[in-house]
Image (cartoon, rainbow, N blue to C red; front, side, top):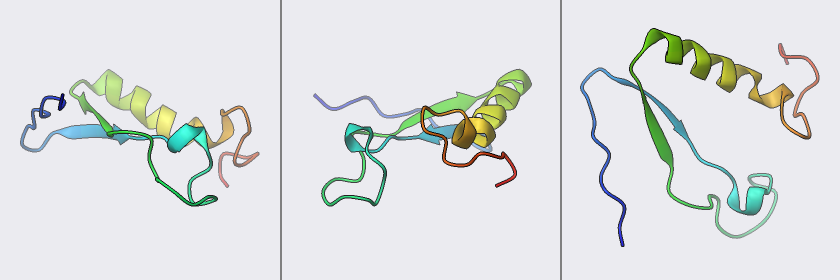
Length: 73
């Protein structure tokens, strides 16, 4: 069964994300790039915008195997 369509709002901000298939590193193996349909969450409140911004910017250092050691990198 297909998922319902996302409701889109003019001039809205969305946090759009997806993960690598099987949580593998993207572009390191052959086969599908993503494991499923992307997610898009409506960012409708200033407080959520701050949370999303922190998540996006800190994600490379807060994973199980950090991509970088220093946030500026």
